[in-house]
Amino acid sequence: MPGKSLHNRLSLKNPKMCPPPPAPGKAEGKKPPPQKRTYYVQAGLFENEANANALAEKIRQHGHAASVARVEIPEKNTLYRVTAGSFTSFNKAVAVSDTLNKKGIKTIVHKQ
Figure 1 (cartoon, rainbow, N blue to C red):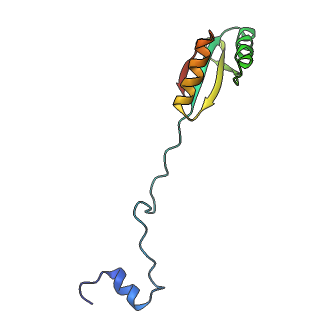
Figure 2: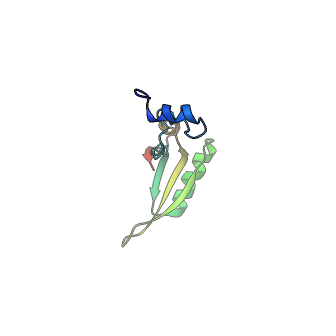
Figure 3: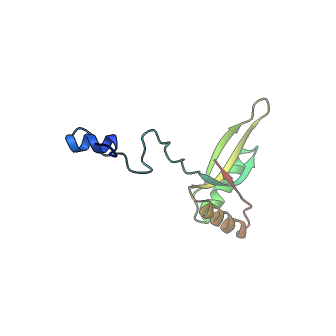
């Protein structure tokens, strides 16, 4: 059968013998979509754990989730990072940051 592709020739003889070609954009071996980035709102970094906990409590009183994470700096000291939430949306992280800034809690948005 001149002019017919191998797929068409095989399909005409035995339709079960040759599966249809993959849909465009769904080729095997295609890389998975990139993972969404996570953003967090940092409200402080303290040497004193009690100060970090006090700020976290102040953030909670304003209705936001807050946490304190211990950060080890090699050959230096231990610091305590205060964060106010983790977000997959940059805009949501900025909105929370702006809200806390207006309430006197200085913050910055970071990518994880």
